[in-house]
Length: 165
Image (tube, rainbow, N blue to C red; front, top):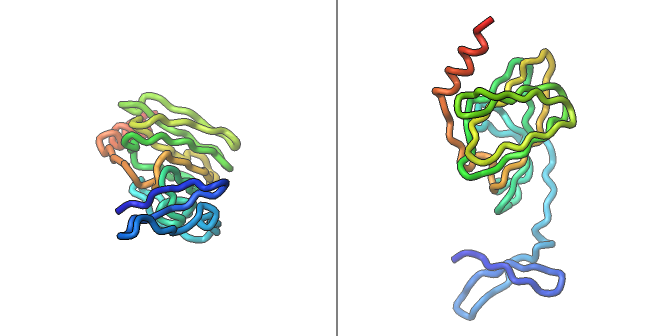
């Protein structure tokens, strides 16, 4: 049975149902956690990510944030996040983001720029510079791997476009 939040004063507690009613599990304050750098994982989009705050690391339920380092020449697989919004902040470097139903749009971002990608919009970041870039990526979901739909047919369109003079 799922946990239920109970608010008492300034504390929020998670409760579990049991035969006697409810039992306290942990207060919200007891669930605060710090994520240290160093852990990584490979995402469906084709990159190795720096683990951040997510369902997998801290038990988040509605939001996640991860670090995406992109070496020079790196390109994501074209994808969208089903019913999930994305905001990405370019921490360092320079990076293009291609987007749209046929990858017909692009934006070139510099350090400090942010990009909002609505739910269900196909997109692919592409580091076309000679230097690494690093993104901080936030998704309106507990895990950045939730709802990912890969679009290999758009990968081909993007590859053909980059081969043209």
